[in-house]
Length: 406
Image (cartoon, rainbow, N blue to C red):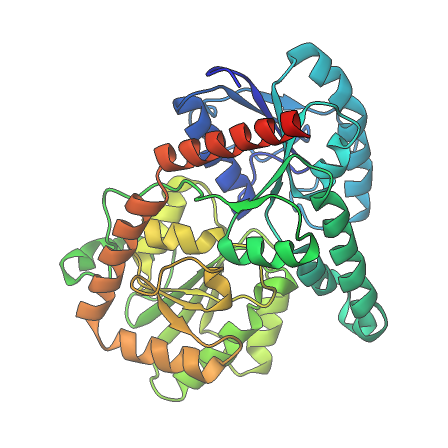
């Protein structure tokens, strides 16, 4: 592959949108355009525009469908129409751009690229067999949960065998997918992520004024402990465990609150909070743009990252680490990354362990500062733009060599 050969990244989703996958797509393409080659994105026609300069990479969009502009990228009827539109328009875009490499993000984009004869990489962001059952309505989970898991795994296995190489967002996902397709070339890549130069945030005693200012801006309680969950509210995230842990914490200390920062529908969270007697302790805010995200992280003492479905990497984990915010995460949520020194890890699905870890850290400001500093150091060392661009280039060269050999 020539140094400036175009890699066309296909993602069947709205862009930009305040979700982890969209955020990491932006960092990937930014890194690839800054090192070695050009990269472009092909995605849906719509997104949620934010103030500020446009992304520093080309974006090509599929045609619009009147009235179908959802910002959520999870399963829904309109998505089938959007995916079909993107698939039908991809061949013409290929002929126009003549990219050296197609990179398909998620299964929908992977299906769209199957007819192409070009060098192709499947960039897997999740274990579909593990995640798909969490989109099944609860009333139908007994009847449809197992079929959803089996069909998701079958689709993953089908796609893994049909690409020149497979990249994954985490070591855990690579190991899980390898069991589905032992002969496929599957490589975890170190996702690029920025470090906030102004971190660590307000858990540092010297920055109490910034913390108080952020809470006032967000209309949050000015005193007491504030825990942050920043992400979508799909079932696979396991956000319900945060409310259970909060209930345990509230029985031990009166002044503790949970901030849910999400662009998902927050009504189920508020309803579940009321059922647990937590009304007034759970606060909903939009994720918003980068300036708002800074304030959200400054306002909190700790970030919480649960996970019900294994495989995918919660970008909210990298975000909290990059901002220097001490983080409590389940083992499953760390996705096999070597972050034991930089994150307080607790047993999966154990709300008592999560509550105990949070309680201990809230009483130990030096430990929070230590975790925040170690987290930023880890992001600098293991998630740089240059490191990602180098790993991506090596994977592309291996895929090209494999195709020539075969």
